[in-house]
Length: 245
Image (cartoon, rainbow, N blue to C red):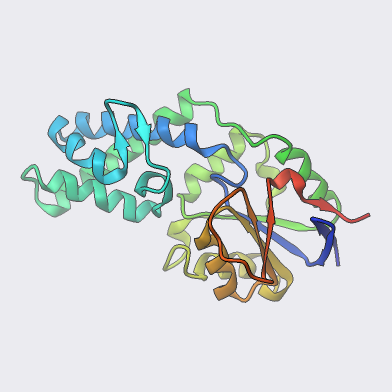
């Protein structure tokens, strides 16, 4: 079984499952861009009033071009985020089903524009680290509360899609993180037991999902306020993960 070093500690496991935004990808600039595009797309589809109602609910300040990184645009599962936009559009007099359809169309418009115009960035050293882990024999995967289609397109843009045996988004399971559904579905796809898997993320919901799924452990990158636990290892970035010779 492959071995990974985390702060000098050896961990034997078979499956490294990763979150994307804030873990592999520099997410703040991406979400700021996406929020601005969603504001414009909602305004185009449902009127500026709807966009102005949506903005504070989504955690976006269009005047200052600021994004709340703890708000829905950055942290909610896709279906929850769309529901917030639909509720905002409803406030302008649209019936729910029409508002929902307009929200979904606006989000699709924003996604398409961002994929065309925005260049995502991996955190420094991330690509080399995950390539080394794959060469060492680990199976790699993605489980994100984002949409799988967008995530696959993002990984293609970054030229790393081929490294991952499975890529799952929020629509691929009944419940998003912190529920264990996505993580368990990923294990089923690659036919590896949860007890042989480690989840790598950047938020408390990532650790909660890994515990609930019965994973061997969870690695949290960055400075998120995750309670200390023997189950959780902390590193500054994915670049700090490396296979043991």
